[in-house]
Every structure is written in C-alpha cells, then in structure tokens.
Length: 432
Ligand code: UGA
Image (tube, rainbow, N blue to C red):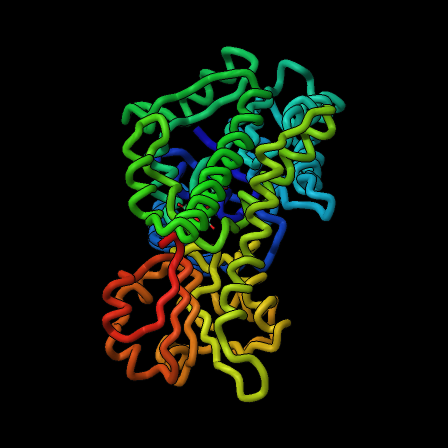
C-alpha cells in the first residue's frame, strides 16, 4: 500500500513515520521547502522524543520519502492523508485555507481510485465540502473522503500513534472502510479497537474529545482553588475521584491552565460551530473563560507576594513550553503569565530546557537563560510553569544555596510542600 501524507507538522510527520514503521510506503509532502530540506538532511523541525531515530530508520529502508513536489507523487498512491494545520482565526473559527489549498493541489492530479483521508481537525461538514470540491474534476467512483481524526499528544506522539485507545474512522461506504482497515492492519492486529461511524460523527468526536479533556483540566483547576480556600488537598481529591471508573484518573492534575496548539483552538472552534448552528455550549464556553481567567489569577498571586520596582525581586521562570516533553510554546500559559508579570514591572528571567528558542522568537525582549543554573542563581523568586524532569530532579539544597530569596511558586505541584517548608522555602503550590 502506497500513501501520501500532506503536511509535515506534528500530526503529519509522526503519522507518516509511524505508517512507514507499520509497513506502508509513505511519501510525506509539505510546501514549506525549508522544512523538507531539513528533513532531507535528517533533521526534525521540532522536538519530539524518539522521532528523529524512527524517521532515519524508515528513510534508510526507503519506506519513508520526503518531497516538496506534491504533483510528482499523487498519481500512483492509493490514499492521501490531509494532515495540514487548521489554526485558530482571530474570530475563534478554524482556518481551513491549508485544507482547501491541498484539495485544490490534488484535485486535477488524481489517477484511478484514490482515498482522501482527513486527519486534520476540521469542523463538522468539512468532509462533505471537500467531496463537493473534488467532484468538480474527479468522477464520483474515483474517490471517497474519509474522516480519521488523530488523538496523539505532543511529547508522547509515537507511542500514542502506535498504541492508541482507538482508531476512529468516519466513512460513508464499505470500500473506504476496507481500505482504512488495510491501512491500519498492523494496529488492528494488535487489538486496537477500530471504530467506524458516519463521517460527520468522527469530525464531531475529535472536537468533543478535546473539549471534554479541556473541561477536565479546567474542572480540576477550579477544584484546586477551592481546596486552597477550604484547606482540603487537591492531590487527595484527584485520587479520590479518579478511582471512580466513570471519572477516570487522567487529566486531573492542576496546572497553570491548558495550552498548546489543540485545546484552545478546538474549544474555540467548537463554540463557533455551535453558534453557527444556533446552539449554545454553555459548559464549553465556561471552560474557555475559566482557562483564560486562570492565567491572570495565577499571575496576580505572584504579584501580590513579591517586591516590584527598580530594586524589586528577580523572578526566574522555569518552563515556557505548554507542557513537558515538547518545545512548543503555542498558547502556552507561560506567555500570558510572563507578560502579566512584565507589564506589572516585575524583573523576569526565563529558562526552558527545550523551548527557549521558540519562546525567544516570539518574545525577543524577555531575558532568557541558557542553563538551569543561570536561571536559579541569584533569583529571589522561582515560578515553575512546566513539569520538566530537569526541574523535578533539581537538588533542593543547592537550589536553596544558589537562590537569593526563598519564594517558590510551583504551578505544576512537582515538589512536596512539607519538604519545601522544612528546607526553609516559602512555598506556594496549587490546591493545598
Ligand atoms: C491534545 C490531546 O490530548 C490529544 O489527544 C490530541 O490529539 C491533541 O490535543 C490534538 O488535538 O492534536 P496535546 O495538545 O499534545 O494533546 O496536549 P495534552 O497532553 O492533551 O495537554 C494539553 C494541556 O493540558 C497542556 O497544557 C497540559 O499541561 C494540560 N494538562 C493536561 C493539565 O494541566 N493537567 C492535566 O492533568 C493534563
């Protein structure tokens, strides 16, 4: 089976590599020439654990090819995955320009029957629209459009792809279902559930899944605040409710708010989709508002407790990526929190083991540190925003010695409050 994946972002590149690993012949195409050049040199345009080695392995055995030239490959592939970005527009809707430009790019090049598979997260009904566009130049019997949303997470993308909770396929006929089962044959053989449904349901399920998970995160963040006010402990509460199988124990870690390229975008897009259909998603609107408010709330907690001004405290921020395991800073809570601190006159320096370059590109004027040691040395206050192992493994006694002050705001709950207090830190964490 020969497939083409259009788009070399997190989803496209990881999917293409994993499909090659599963035994398919894969051509991965992107119109960003610099990205393809990098990949052809054996480099990966972003940080994702184990991806570079897996790409190399599959390129070396010719199962994975990279190309800038879509037209050169389309005619002889069995299936084309659309895995381009669908970023958030300023009005909160999903921007589908990359989807439709990819569809325009292929619609006059298809030869024989080709299955078009939408992996990007797209509003409900986009599959129908793609079908209408293709029908302008391709005979009905020569293609089908399938929705196959992806559920991989950044930072654990390869294992998420190879051992997903389910493979979701939205298709309208048996032939496309059969091809999808062939594409995923090796995962299905490993007992991964394959769930077939209406195309529109699959499109909706992706938004519903991300919004539900965002809701879980916002829920536990609000419960954490209430635990602080009532002298309960959110770790214990998360454990207690997580044991209930109906609730489940994942996505119940309080933090500085959800970020990344998916939850904020998909929550906003779903709210817009509802409005377009004359419907209201009050819970999801509440999730969005709660997550936005959280960043101000957590910035204000710091501002209230520190010295600001010319001889004010030096605040060292540990972690800018939206979570550990990635160099991605898109919609990271750190962006708003750091900007809030700076706008209030706080003297800030910032460190991240992987994401500092990406942060510097968008916030070039903020002082950045190259090493953790540089970040903690002389700091009056430390604010932990990402749960990197490098921070978890820090020697607390040397942290104490190197800091000038003793305040720690741990917004990922990576330390034990009793230990921190015993060591003489003024320690603020979430939910206790
Ligand atoms: C998310 C979904 O989890 C994936 O299933 C989906 O495929 C992906 O979006 C997508 O649509 O492409 P991702 O954005 O990589 O994946 O990140 P998550 O691991 O889901 O975390 C999202 C945010 O929630 C992060 O800011 C994280 O720190 C926060 N979070 C998560 C918490 O604050 N607490 C938790 O308990 C879990």
